Image 1: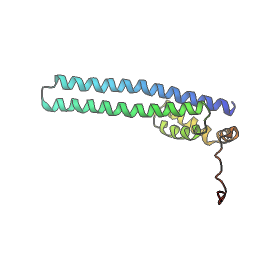
Image 2: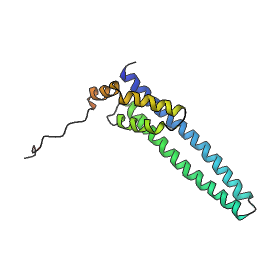
Image 3: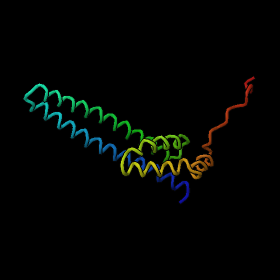
Length: 142
């Protein structure tokens, strides 16, 4: 495979990862929210209703966190897919984050780090004019 094909594939994988994260997040929010609603509605004691409220708060917090990560995966995947210069940096960060998602995220993280930190990834982003521009020489403003 060429470096361009690896880059496109990693971008697509991160976009798919973002979609799967959203679906998983919806499932988790519905489960936590459902349990919390049932405990609040059917709890006979104040403690049972309080635990239900904690479940509802946890559902909101977990949902927000999952959406933030999914948004980041989607943003990084789009930048990599479109071969923007920031895509490599975002891809490395997203790859490190996705290492925690067993088992598919771990495979994506290893593959992303292998390509983006390897010689193919470095040369791909530098050959396409994406290398960082060196700063101007000192005292060039005078």
